[in-house]
Length: 68
Image (cartoon, rainbow, N blue to C red; front, side, top):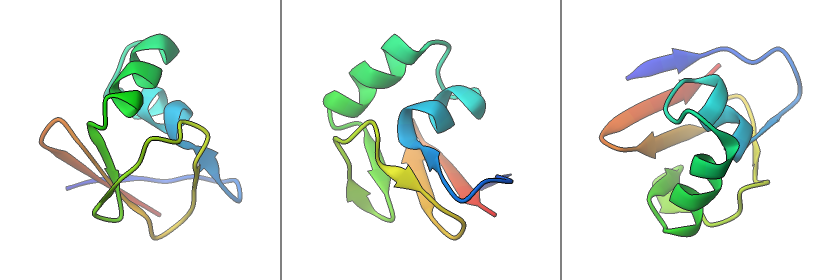
């Protein structure tokens, strides 16, 4: 499990995927979210603008991110 620290109240899911290096571009982030390949707190999420906050767990492509 990787840990990602955010210094704001939240970060949008698509931005988080780019920020963490799991995808290279926003377009790829949009596609993987729309194709139901991303889980937020163990639930598939198709909202690319989903607000991710401290304590959330993100899963994609066999990788797990813990947001602190």
